Image (tube, chains in turn blue, brown, red, yellow):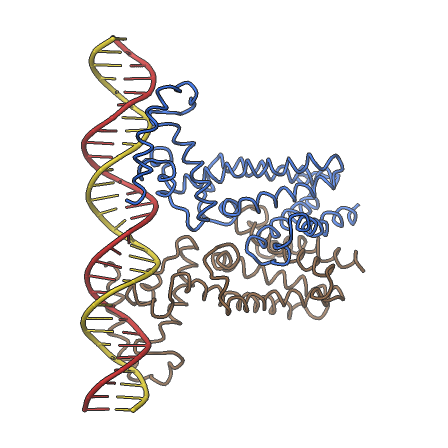
Length: 229
Length: 229
DNA sequence: TTGCAATCTTGACATCATCAAGATTAGCTG
DNA sequence: CAGCTAATCTTGATGATGTCAAGATTGCAA
């Protein structure tokens, strides 16, 4: 019990808190704080610090200051917690893409390329979470919230391709091939960078790195557009 | 001890064998068979059957019919065994690409596309091994044999780009961007297929699937070549 | 034939996920 | 406002895993 301090500390601190802010923490806050949310936050830092292979349910519980069996009342499994983390990840992922697209202005091709930059922003900022979402068997693929969040991200890409290409990939097989190619290019670049397979790019300073990434993305996005029209 | 049978069985069978085939099994075969090789084989089927997250060192030992601590004499760690498996994987990976390239004939662009098909052959045939090699923190990146095997695979791609592009990526930054883009596209497509993110393609019959994959690959390889020259 | 060193086994330890049982407490009901 | 019920949390146990330590076995060389 090396981390017993944390547990004890939480036990003594929280009752005092709850006494004076019962209205502030609403939602599903029961008699020991908003544990569900706390576990999600703990899980995310656990992922960031220990990596996907070092992730531990008990570690999350310790971070949240509860006993090792407490998470079971909010997540059936370790997998269920990871599924929820992946779902949350997809939402942030989509937000990253939208942010970059907004900054890119109105040109459809610039917006498509920008979505790719947002894709890479997320992957490089949260590598373990990214791998959890795309390169592991942990998340439950049948989970509805996860599926929906994933499809929402895919929709951003499809819409961007639709604007840049003039055809909706959902209705045009050739445009769908473009979309798959664009997604593959960006996704592969993200994975190779995370895997340390592209040290010459990975070691660049942020500004240079973005330039290098942009030139790789342009290999497809730009030529793909102009060659087809 | 549910698998004690296997252990006992091996113990009684092998002495008889060794008595009459001591010359047949050479290499690093010591007094109980060629355990190192047996563990590698066991590890590969363990990966194939249980997946990367279900992989277990004790499971490998059971498959090889030895005690749970026996592997320690051939691999320092569980990670060391996985590193060796990844190294072996890279060799097969390179062989897959070369096989496809030979079948493609002499046209440089066809050969470059063929290397991509070999890439995908391997990923789809050995998904867990592929993820071990490219999307996990298990293998020891400082391992020399692993690094060499990985670079050898990368060299195949660089050479193929060199032939198709007319410039050596190792000496020309623009050609290197082409190589990175080609690698990213194929790598991303492989990962997305493994992650189940492209069901419309993944569910096709083999022949149709290859056609779909080929059309995605062509989005880059062909235009990348003709657009630059 | 003898002895050494490599190989393998047994057993132990800490950690993990999960389950079962009991304690605590929030918030509704009367 | 008192009591009850169900959700929440804790403690403890079980079986599995990776790793370590110590002893047994055996190939091989002197």
